[in-house]
Image (cartoon, rainbow, N blue to C red):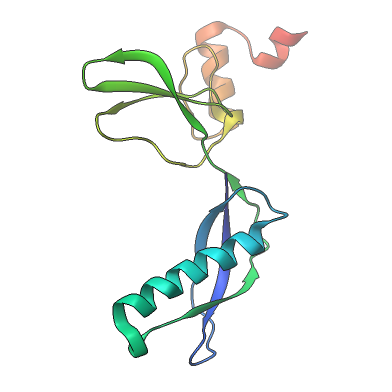
Length: 144
């Protein structure tokens, strides 16, 4: 999944939103269609709840910001009591979640996760510092 930001407008007034909204989409190529479908579901719910006093939304445009990939969690076989471990297929980060919570999305930064200790760092630079301090080398040196 990829998180994108978009602008919508109120169908009744024609006014664009003052703030962007976010949606998780499967790809950038189908993002507009997926967002239109999400907004149609939203509009249907609004019609069902409020009838004629509905606030319907219409897709305007995607923002030109860099999309953020989302974690793709899958359940690991390791289960102990009420704690279940999940691993992201993108960055290999492992997280423990207490039952009944199941993880969904979350910003994924594979370039900031240490593959040795499975910790995510604030920046790539912090990850490199950690690797040099803890393991005496960076991944670039290891590859050579």
